[in-house]
Image (tube, rainbow, N blue to C red; front, side):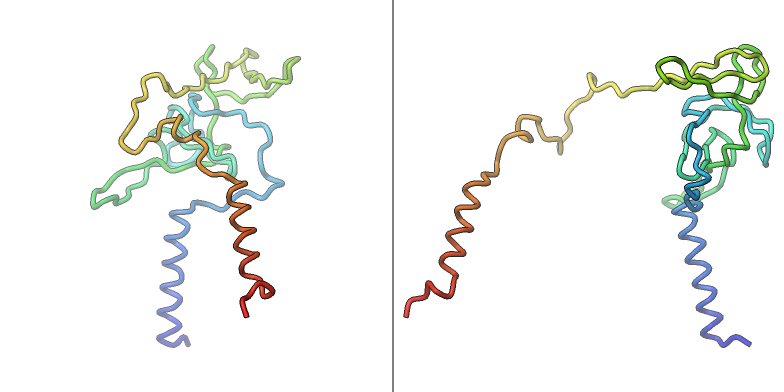
Length: 185
């Protein structure tokens, strides 16, 4: 029979690990199970083929390559309390639970990866045989960026403010004066 201390410790211990797992997420995949060539990318339109949200079609908003998981917009919603408000957020699902939508036939399909002469990966639909293009990478527009209060100008950041030689000379002088052979007697 467990003592009172052991019961309290085990309860606190399991609560701590539950909270830690909620923050950290699932464990990282073993190196032998990591997917080398991902067939999905952020911005792809996919259909969830298993789980609670089976049949939903939406786009991928995040790929977690260390855990073999993807986050699909509006799927696997969980309620969380953030700053005193209840909010629903998307949680990740395993990559094997989604299938890419073929744009030519608008149906979920399996994909094969092939490589062109420049060794760039090309996705080919198994149903229609057509090439499925990779989604465009949305780049940040730095032209419209305005400096904030805490931003440092590039000229100031790149200015040379530390002189190595001056520091070396000073350290040599300090060592010379601090040696035991240089004391006044």
